[in-house]
Image (cartoon, rainbow, N blue to C red):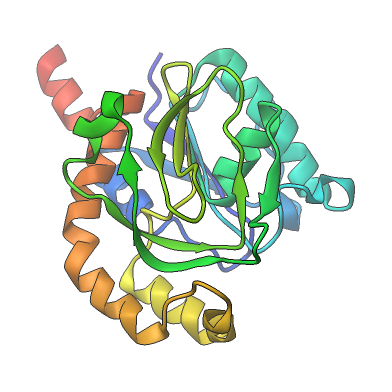
Amino acid sequence: MATGRILIIVHQKTSTSGNVGALLQARGYQLDQRCPCIGDALPDHLEDHDGVVVFGGPMSANDDTHLDGIGQELKFIDRVLARDLPFIGICLGGQLLARALGAKVAPDAGGRVEIGYTEVSPTAAFAGLFDASRYFFQWHKEGFDLPAGTRLMAAGHVYPHQAFLHGARAVGLQFHPEINADMIQRWTRGGGHRTDQPNAQPVAAHAIGYRLFNDGIARWTENLFDFVGLPSRATTALAAG
């Protein structure tokens, strides 16, 4: 039964759900935000949530050996998949989904990162989903292999696996559709030195990319919500009435 609540999992005390959270709220959902890495408990059961979104963070999906929060999330994702709830994993969240499905997460062999707006190439089966945008903000130094039994949704030049689908409602993304102008400022202010790494774009390019691509990314995100089964609750209520 639909509850109107979305579980939001973040990885730092200061983390926010950005444009993804704002768009979910505009659809009529309430956000239940938790951060296991600072001690927040994950739900004992999932009947009270319509879906789960796991966001990015500075740690690695391989840190479950010494970060209890990451270990908890890997086990929790197994439970989400078993219930076939809508699931969106963003950057670290997508990498955690890949690991939960048995795939490897690792840095680029050449030491390259992706920081800034890059173009992704959708596969034929998912081309329609990417009509609204093929450019997305990136901020990562690791990527995921494609888990067995999943479908590649979009590829990239440096990191070849940019989005994948498990089953019908679980999507792993390498990029950041949630990014907003405030987040770009905070990330570049706190981690601007990372733009010196191989393949990173300069800080000035990020604001330009945001102005060019943000509206299309918002439309793409709305389409993704529909795709995984998170329709507008206002629309659902009207249809039911």
